[in-house]
Image (cartoon, rainbow, N blue to C red; front, top):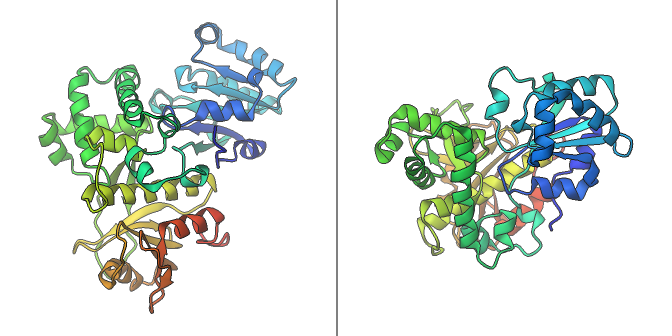
Length: 386
């Protein structure tokens, strides 16, 4: 059990919520920690599912009964019965109840004109465990195995990752009904994992997987819809240098990406370690933005000339991640190029270098521990920025 940073009980006091996230990130555990068991309608339980599938209108009676002891009604795995959203919509309009609707797949909620409550519910996400949620945090372990709760606490993390990837293939993807050949999709997963943290090139991925470009695009859509992968869009506001327009792809978890790619170990001076460190910082920033309900968008900046800054948070912060124990002046080149644009307020290079300092031109050089402490304490970006 870990204390999660997502303030679920506080958020739902303000508005009903969709809580999205891939399987095994801890949504059900967080719900059980936060609400009484009688407040949770679990659609994975066949008896409840069959009853509501036959009579969706009976949700009203169930919700009213729950409301006698709890102001919040939780419906777990709402994508299994999207028709219930019409009933939820009506209950929000006609009662004082608040709802939390969880899901590990958005595809069924996006198809067929499903009622997404027309703005009557906010959306939030639950991610793998962040450094702020792990009092026993170890960087090397995290960069290899990631932050899925059952992986982090396991004495056999590789076995847990293997089981997760296989379960994902057999259950999630098969349930989507869009992949006829799971062996081909398994090959695609490995190729996608090898392209993790890189710009998407569908033509190259098509060649490497041996399937048409249209199929590759469809399979990436499945990753996005099941929250197993996400895109980091390019930051295109620079004026002095032309920026690329291609997004980068990331898996939702460092350990899942490593395992799918076949990396079961790597050294600190390897390219795989450097990519995992960048991925880790991406996940920390993404979690912080979502959990703190920040307005900034997370993007990356790359010019057609090859200069690149890993992360840009709106106009507030630019972050370059370097898995080096000794930062030198060359490592600041891209941050300085972006700084010349005059569009972002703060610049940070985060690394393994333990000497926290500031360059003469105002770029902060922070050890990763210091960076994460300031990030989660809220001191990197003031509350008035954004």
